[in-house]
Image 1 (tube, helix red, strand yellow):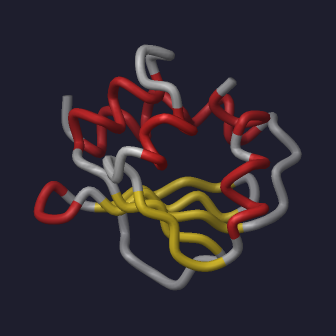
Image 2: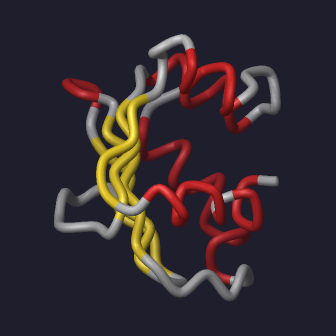
Length: 94
């Protein structure tokens, strides 16, 4: 699954979430997913919080197979910017 497929899959959740900040999933060479309030795109841009991880780890995280806290502690997931926004993501991907 590519970043566009993941973005398409998350679109309905993002649009109905009431999330009002911006967060970027940066998967390196595989691309980015930028969630800005109720919109989602695969175009890179500024965000309040950037979460860097591999595409495989992003898929596992969204499928509920990867614990975000454990991924952060083990270095699979890196957070730049406002960490409280990353914590709020549960309302989007939970």
